[in-house]
Length: 61
Image 1 (cartoon, rainbow, N blue to C red):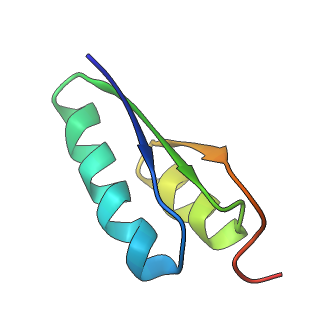
Image 2 (image 1 turned 45 degrees about the vertical axis):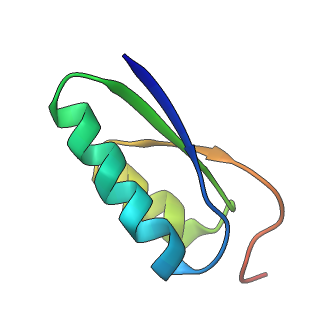
């Protein structure tokens, strides 16, 4: 099963989606997250083994 999740906002908006994506991947699903291209989000998702698909402008320029 494949999932594409999107979110936009601060870490408080991205972190719950990151956790959900990681849980889906642990169950064998393919899950990627579209979120702002902030380095903080890239590190968070990368640490969980979830691909970040950059979307829009950074939240923190």
